[in-house]
Length: 75
Image (cartoon, rainbow, N blue to C red; front, side):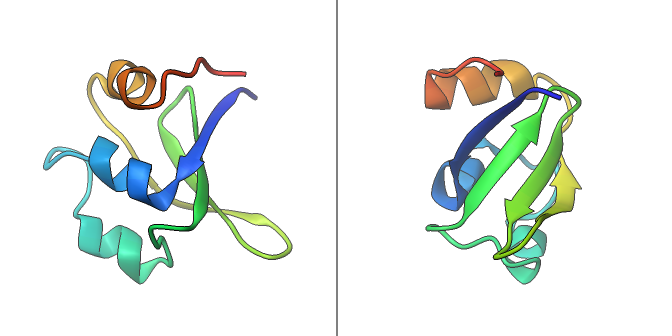
């Protein structure tokens, strides 16, 4: 599966009102310094010390938003 990795701070800039409330991401453990990744299906995964956890998902034109904010392609 291909992903784009970013910080929690960047993720919070990507998230819109149509996705999920930022409070839910914070409650799941997403902090500005957290390492997160988004796959091509829009699943958001948070890096824990020993695994990746799915903590939410993006909707709509998230691929364009992710690319625009990170300058990265899915790899």
